[in-house]
Image (cartoon, rainbow, N blue to C red):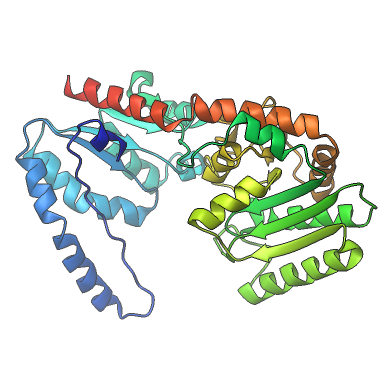
Length: 361
């Protein structure tokens, strides 16, 4: 959208995944084939365009590699001078074995790219260890699409007597929602000078990294039981509610009403969570961890970063921020400077325009 507004002619090539659920495998393959036929007009246009730039957002699963390779490699054979930039938004590749098949397949794509964008220094260093030259790698941090609040909004927001807490994410254990609730439980046992409203927002979700809860029912029951217990301890001064996901204006309202955003993630393939940028854009003080590329957007000037993500430590940091409005204001104001500066949409568009101009000469 941003490049189109700057006069670039942008066309999207949608790469549909294989949907296996609720269907016979051969039927799923046939459906996928007809979906991919929709790509042909744009692919043909790509072949007959003089000096196009192909921007590839590359997934990091074996299936995504095959899905891209089926059409990309023939295109590159028919158009050998095609300039390609590949963007990596996940962090799975950071944990692959040196001799893994996925790594080898992955390198085939990257070596055919003129440039590769990553989210931060850790990812850049990893790809250098894969043999990619430094001048081929460009750091492009995620931008925030939400309209940022103003400094006056932040000053007013953090001057009241009530404090709102928020954890918003897919409810995966390693994203830190159990520690968030357990930290609040520790706070509920103490008498407060402030009224605290806490929100847990997100749908139940499972990944291969989930180990604490075996079923969705077990996870849901634990959340409900924990919240009921917290609210029974000190319901008038401290109250918790669970919202099963939010989008659009509802999501933005949650961020703007929150004073402290908590994401003590240890997710093994964490990259650069967009929710942290959204929290900064809304003037929240943030408590998070140092995993993935979080430190490429957060530091001790604009957030509280912990190495220990235990409930005890998270409780300690939340309680400190609840009782120190000046600290919250300072972190939120510094976060807003980041959002209006290096993490702004304007800076993001400028970076991509430089990349495209360099590729087209």
